[in-house]
Amino acid sequence: MPPEQKVFNKIRLSRSIVGIKEAAALRRVIIKDGFLGMGQDVAYFEKELTDFIGGDIEVSCVNSGTAALHLAVMAVVKSGDEVLVPGLTFLATFQAITAAGAVAVACDIDPKTLLLDLKDAQKRLTPRTKALMLVHYSGGVGDLKAFYAFAKKHGLRIIEDAAHAFGTVYDGKRIGSCGDIICFSFDGIKNITSGEGGAVVTRDRQVAQFVKDARMLGIHKDSEKRFQGQRSWEFEVTHQGYRYHLSNLLAAIGRVQLQRFPVFCQRRRKIARRYMRLLGDCPGVELIDRDYETVVPHIFPVLIKAAKRDALRDYMLQLGIETGIHYYPSHWLDFFGGRSVSLPVLEKVYKEILSLPIHPGISSEDQTRVSVAIYNFMSENK
Ligand SMILES: *Cc1c(COP(=O)(O)O)cnc(C)c1O
Image 1 (cartoon, rainbow, N blue to C red):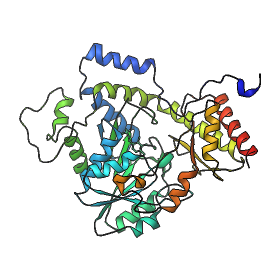
Image 2: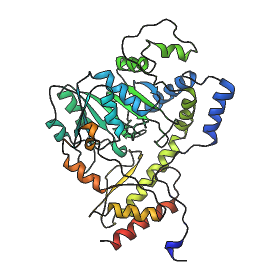
Image 3: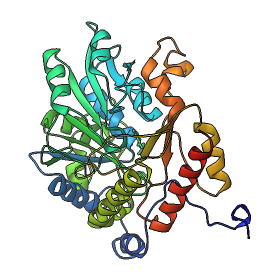
């Protein structure tokens, strides 16, 4: 049978890796505990995340990564303040900034790291700039020390969108254990999932208290009561709050996933390293330099040269291989200025970027198939 007629199983770009252990945890919460809201499982998940990340930190779980970012921005900026943010990120990063009433100031990226270009950020500083949002794109964090030095010099708070970087290590410590305010996402396909969910991690007790109150409609110190199976009937509220708390059901999934993380981490790193080897000398493919001893890759983007990206993507889809484009630039969207700024590096990268399948369930045969498809197409279409 000629290869094009062969029936292939589909290779997915990403997927949730959940099974009987997560199902058993849900069963326990539903059948045995019977308490679905924010209670003991959330308290345990926060404690276990604190131990995993390490350091003198406070972890506050919420019901999405976007909610984590929204409350983090709200904690440190006022309406009308400006937040510098690299243009290469998921829409949620931008929406979280505007949700807090702040202005998202899109900055260009470094062509090698695909992370914030500090020189470009410098040019966009104004007296209203109050915070710097970092995005740990594809798990990489770049020169964090330089970002923090820049923020210190200009009196800015830092929020790290670490949705891609759960488990990544910098300077011998896990992301979240140091730094200002760090946000994680536990959505279905992230490095660990709780079904949906997120967390704000900080050493700043005032920020932590703000987030803990704001996730429960702003009710002062309600979290502590809920963790003891109580709630506040008479209370004080001093600021806007939301229903952003995590439920026991989701926390129970997250707790199982945290135990499985070492295996997920090892698999993700192994897949990334193997792509680096298999595609290292592929014509027209540029790899992104990341150190997979320290990075835990959530996505695996490569750059496809000579305007071949879209054709390659179609070709791979015909072979049953899904790929992704992370991300469509937010500064092109009407709501965020509709191309009122130009970010030349990002706009060039956007045309070339292609995310290859990566998740702990990919077999090495699947991965070989992905690499061979790219190799064949790029060699034949030089
Ligand atoms: C997933 C993600 C978010 C949002 O997290 P949700 O849990 O989906 O709300 C934010 N930023 C980045 C870069 C992400 O990948």
